[in-house]
Image (cartoon, rainbow, N blue to C red; front, side, top):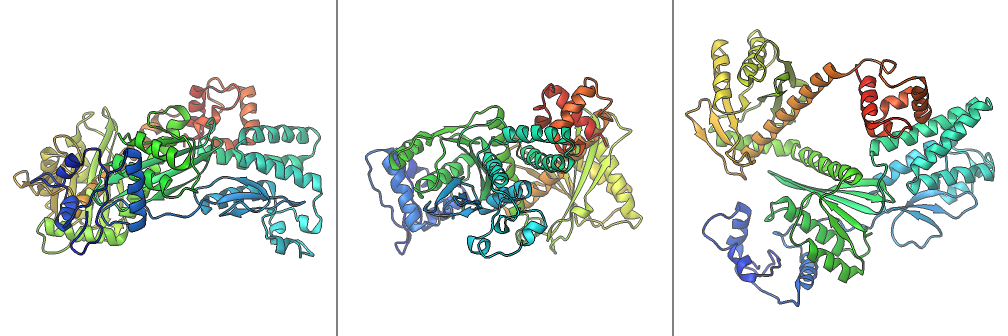
Length: 585
């Protein structure tokens, strides 16, 4: 699709060209961004290919060459970094990019240099293998600062023998190859042997190494996986899109990275996901290709993508959507990271300020509001009811002004009474001069919640506060919310692409998140037990196994349920009970 000056606006492919073009040129139902493209089109050129695979490859070639403004664009063409272990007498660990021309052993690839630095930092603390440049290493006459802070054993000046250093290198290789469980078991046996021989300093050093390894395993929560896998999750929300990539090699998570494609036409998560996969794996033949891709959405054209990868790169790759066990945790982790990265990007000050101005125009206000508050209620069948109040200003979320209210003395499940109690407590204090009054008070709910808010403000004689009720649409789909300004008679809606609506959705969702977090904490506090010694089924032998496995109570308290369940004799159910006991306060 070409513009007035012959500039390329958009490149697409289709099995049925007539049907695809007809979807753009119709009287109604076009997304605003698609309508903007259609208004600029002056000419359309077509190319016939032999099959879908060739069409996909041609599409990606043209997108990469011309970067049309209305295509989803991925701005990342760097090569992946690796960790290299040099082949010297006292090997060095370092970051490597580009061709593998240097002699040594390579580990990776990692999704970013930051992920490598995190791994190298852990190895430096645990095993003290040198990471300095060879020019620096060969010209030392005394140990450097790394030796003083116990990050290196100073092989440059002969303070460590070759056998001990080789053992540290072997342990580092085991970690980089993903054999962390075997390494931790080996170190645990060595710690017990050193303790038996009364070599307590050596045992303490081994204990610290075990603690570091167990901690990183717990943070990743990825033990039990296998293979080379990329997990890709695409999230689209009002105002932008994010694709999060997690790299797994040898069953171990090496790191992750967030991408923010320029989304103009395709607005469904599955379309953004497909466009990302096409550009990411087809446009850079040197990029490492896993044996499996795990995604968070299905698309009919995945089979074409697999065929194109096979033809272009000579390798087979499978795309999975419905996964279980460890792969399901990887998938959920990618989705969570994508959601957080996108919400963080949309919450920047400049973005929020523009949305505040749009809200003032949408509500026909004389001035741009400076303070918005939103209330929401959360409970489980009436248990542990909590109300949340979140506050936003033109600079973004004002988290220091967030408040939660534990609701008591009402009928279980009565949201109206809960809202009445929370608003009364909030505005009673404001009437007494505590805190600031909001310019706009948002209430998550329909006419009933709005009437309750109006009743409280009238009882307390609070004036100059604009009320805005936010009710989900008939299908409860974002973008179809019904809004009520001050009373139920003033009902209206905003277009799905409206920045004002995006701001309302953002505040509403943040209020919902804050309420649920408070509710779960209140509910969990009432259900947890108090001490480890009081846990049924954990006697002296199991306590000893737990402490030996983690190297101490402090590391045990940092472990997740999945990590505790890996200790011999500890079931998943018992691990959950132990975890609750350790976090009861």
